[in-house]
Image (cartoon, rainbow, N blue to C red; front, side, top):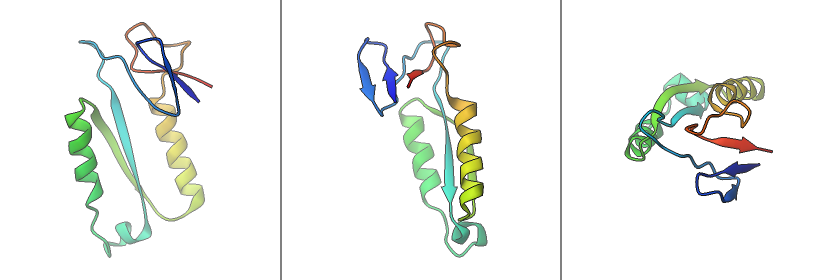
Length: 101
């Protein structure tokens, strides 16, 4: 995967974006673990991640917790990915990211 950046360079495997006054990058977090769902383990990562994303100017729009089941993880990853990726065909000059394979 190559990500096209505002400066014209490409960066394999890294997401970058061009920010302007109308476009704010967004993110989602997927937490995986039966122990989190059962309450045996208290999650400390989500708050840290949310704070860090906010400090970068990224709005956290969704957080999901799924059990340690491959099928549910795959479904969640696909759903979150489909909701967040902007393809080059639908992207305008002010898009958050332009991603090409």
